[in-house]
Image (tube, rainbow, N blue to C red; front, top):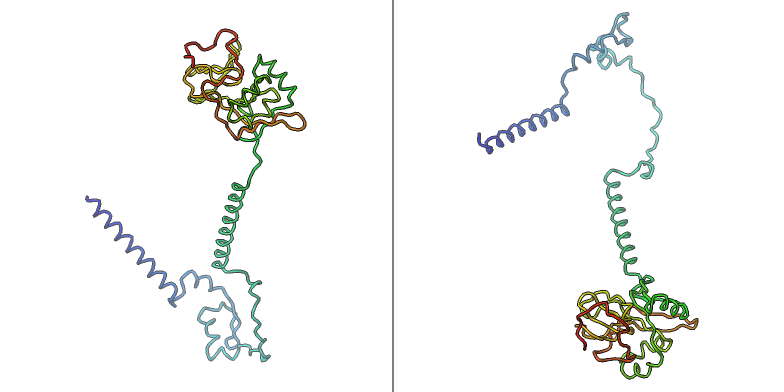
Length: 289
């Protein structure tokens, strides 16, 4: 059978059933009909004294209804003749709220709570937070401890929270740095204290550049770029020397590095220290520039 015909039959049956239920509900609300057999059966043993009809047997339902007739009205108790009590309207708060009022208040309360939570979250997101680690100013430590760490690391000190290498910078090269580093003013305090802070990534394609203990250079394993100990380019495809961070020395002799500012490394050909490879290179095949 066609599904459309089946659907039409089902809808028709449901419509007839709904109509029947509606008519039955209407008849139930407006009907005055006779008492049911069960109700009559329960009323049979009831006894109501009648002033007119002395009897010792059970009173039927018709006798009970006769109390409201002319014969039974004489037995009805007279109404109280006291004046009625004045009407006092009840307090709405003592009655309580209606369902509609409760739902409306609940909806507005939830709406207000949602707006409040969203506003608090937005303010918390936009509120300036204290920043630490990479992207902020990192206190590397006291200069004597930094020099000891460089020696312990074979000439290189890695600071993971700042993603940087810290190496020794010879103070004898300061004058060359002053003339060849266009960013000298931003790193002058650190260089004057004998250290340099270098960003760990290669300027070529962003690989992390490790140290080479044998050559005492930085040598990138990705494409062979090489840099001397202070990050000046010595070979490979990198477009410049290693990038670096501004440095300052505090009154308590601590080195503070601003990792939120990356300074582009010195151009190709910059050589302030004159350091050449001090042993075998870790990466071979790099072109000299």
